Length: 171
Image (cartoon, rainbow, N blue to C red; front, side, top):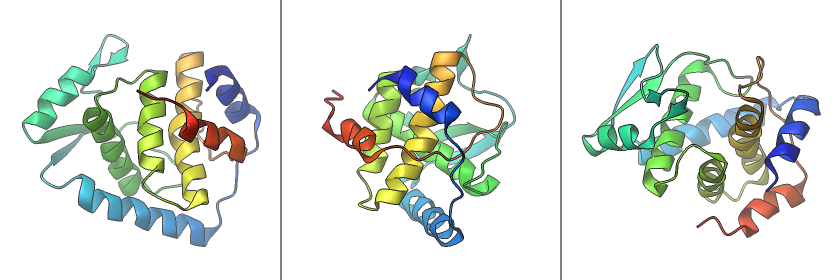
């Protein structure tokens, strides 16, 4: 998957106006997923980047905390057009735990593996679109441009792009 093409599309595409019923259903999907994925994890919300070493997230530090049953989640920059602040933080928890579960870093390959994993948990194509935008659209911009966009949005991608993720060898 070409990170530059994903980033360019995310930046240039218009924001998708998520229908209210789809947003409610997706919100519930995240809540339901959290009930399974976050069992036994003591999540603490903090207003700093707890796992950064220099300019990068340190998977080993997250793994060490998770092995003790703990996870710190940054509450900064918690604006989302898709999820309310509480559910967006829950989504962050799930996302970080998937990196730990899959033992993948926060580079492009790790983000692709994480996105592939969570997208495989639903057959709902629109949920997969939302997950792709939230994980890979935003990550592509950050990793290729050095920072997230000031205003994050939901962007739809061609079905072939999503299919490319499922057809990729992510090992």
